[in-house]
Length: 118
Image (cartoon, rainbow, N blue to C red; front, side):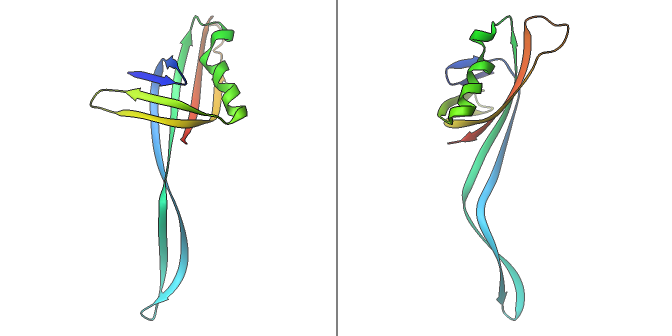
Protein backbone atom coordinates (compact mmCIF):
# COMPACT_ATOMS: atom_id res chain seq x y z
CA UNK A 1 0.00 0.00 0.00
CA UNK A 2 1.38 3.39 -0.98
CA UNK A 3 -0.07 6.32 0.94
CA UNK A 4 1.32 9.84 0.59
CA UNK A 5 0.13 12.86 2.56
CA UNK A 6 1.69 16.26 1.89
CA UNK A 7 4.73 14.59 0.34
CA UNK A 8 5.30 12.16 3.24
CA UNK A 9 5.09 8.45 2.37
CA UNK A 10 3.36 6.86 5.36
CA UNK A 11 3.51 3.40 6.90
CA UNK A 12 -0.27 2.95 7.16
CA UNK A 13 -1.79 0.00 9.02
CA UNK A 14 -5.44 0.94 8.38
CA UNK A 15 -7.52 3.35 6.27
CA UNK A 16 -11.15 4.10 7.04
CA UNK A 17 -13.23 6.17 4.62
CA UNK A 18 -16.62 7.67 5.46
CA UNK A 19 -19.04 9.67 3.37
CA UNK A 20 -21.65 11.98 4.90
CA UNK A 21 -24.50 13.57 2.97
CA UNK A 22 -24.86 17.35 3.14
CA UNK A 23 -28.41 18.54 2.90
CA UNK A 24 -31.53 19.66 4.66
CA UNK A 25 -34.74 18.05 5.93
CA UNK A 26 -38.15 19.55 6.63
CA UNK A 27 -41.69 18.57 7.54
CA UNK A 28 -44.36 18.74 4.85
CA UNK A 29 -48.02 17.95 4.32
CA UNK A 30 -48.76 16.12 1.05
CA UNK A 31 -51.85 14.24 -0.09
CA UNK A 32 -53.47 14.90 3.28
CA UNK A 33 -50.68 13.22 5.23
CA UNK A 34 -47.45 14.10 7.01
CA UNK A 35 -44.20 13.46 5.17
CA UNK A 36 -40.53 14.21 5.76
CA UNK A 37 -38.80 15.92 2.82
CA UNK A 38 -35.10 15.80 2.14
CA UNK A 39 -32.83 17.71 -0.24
CA UNK A 40 -29.22 16.55 -0.67
CA UNK A 41 -26.70 19.08 -1.98
CA UNK A 42 -23.57 16.94 -1.95
CA UNK A 43 -21.29 14.86 0.22
CA UNK A 44 -18.33 15.19 2.53
CA UNK A 45 -15.65 12.50 2.33
CA UNK A 46 -13.46 11.85 5.35
CA UNK A 47 -10.61 9.44 6.07
CA UNK A 48 -8.87 8.17 9.18
CA UNK A 49 -5.34 6.83 8.75
CA UNK A 50 -3.63 4.69 11.39
CA UNK A 51 0.14 4.99 10.98
CA UNK A 52 3.40 3.81 12.54
CA UNK A 53 6.81 5.49 12.52
CA UNK A 54 9.95 3.65 13.56
CA UNK A 55 13.44 5.10 14.01
CA UNK A 56 12.41 8.60 12.87
CA UNK A 57 13.63 11.62 14.80
CA UNK A 58 10.83 13.86 16.09
CA UNK A 59 12.18 16.78 14.03
CA UNK A 60 11.71 14.67 10.86
CA UNK A 61 8.45 13.03 11.94
CA UNK A 62 5.38 13.14 9.69
CA UNK A 63 3.23 13.35 12.83
CA UNK A 64 5.10 16.45 13.96
CA UNK A 65 4.76 17.98 10.49
CA UNK A 66 1.01 17.28 10.30
CA UNK A 67 0.43 18.96 13.68
CA UNK A 68 1.30 22.31 12.10
CA UNK A 69 -1.32 21.76 9.39
CA UNK A 70 -4.03 21.25 11.99
CA UNK A 71 -3.19 24.71 13.30
CA UNK A 72 -2.95 26.61 10.00
CA UNK A 73 -5.77 24.90 8.08
CA UNK A 74 -3.99 24.59 4.72
CA UNK A 75 -5.09 21.94 2.23
CA UNK A 76 -2.54 19.20 1.44
CA UNK A 77 -2.30 16.48 -1.21
CA UNK A 78 -3.56 12.99 -0.30
CA UNK A 79 -2.69 10.05 -2.57
CA UNK A 80 -3.48 6.36 -2.07
CA UNK A 81 -2.46 3.77 -4.65
CA UNK A 82 -3.74 0.28 -3.91
CA UNK A 83 -3.84 -0.73 -7.56
CA UNK A 84 -7.29 -1.96 -8.59
CA UNK A 85 -8.38 -2.23 -4.94
CA UNK A 86 -8.49 1.49 -4.11
CA UNK A 87 -7.05 4.71 -5.52
CA UNK A 88 -7.48 8.35 -4.61
CA UNK A 89 -5.71 11.57 -5.46
CA UNK A 90 -7.27 14.65 -3.89
CA UNK A 91 -6.66 17.65 -1.63
CA UNK A 92 -7.64 17.36 2.03
CA UNK A 93 -7.61 19.27 5.29
CA UNK A 94 -5.97 17.65 8.31
CA UNK A 95 -8.75 17.80 10.89
CA UNK A 96 -7.04 16.08 13.82
CA UNK A 97 -4.03 14.03 14.79
CA UNK A 98 -3.44 11.77 17.78
CA UNK A 99 0.08 10.60 18.58
CA UNK A 100 1.00 7.74 20.90
CA UNK A 101 4.44 6.92 22.25
CA UNK A 102 4.24 3.29 23.43
CA UNK A 103 6.09 2.79 26.68
CA UNK A 104 9.11 0.54 26.58
CA UNK A 105 9.51 0.69 22.80
CA UNK A 106 12.23 3.07 21.76
CA UNK A 107 12.01 5.03 18.52
CA UNK A 108 8.47 3.87 17.72
CA UNK A 109 5.40 6.09 17.61
CA UNK A 110 1.90 5.46 16.34
CA UNK A 111 -0.48 8.14 15.19
CA UNK A 112 -3.86 8.54 13.58
CA UNK A 113 -4.77 11.36 11.25
CA UNK A 114 -8.30 12.43 10.37
CA UNK A 115 -8.72 14.06 6.95
CA UNK A 116 -11.61 15.88 5.23
CA UNK A 117 -11.79 16.48 1.52
CA UNK A 118 -11.07 20.09 0.58
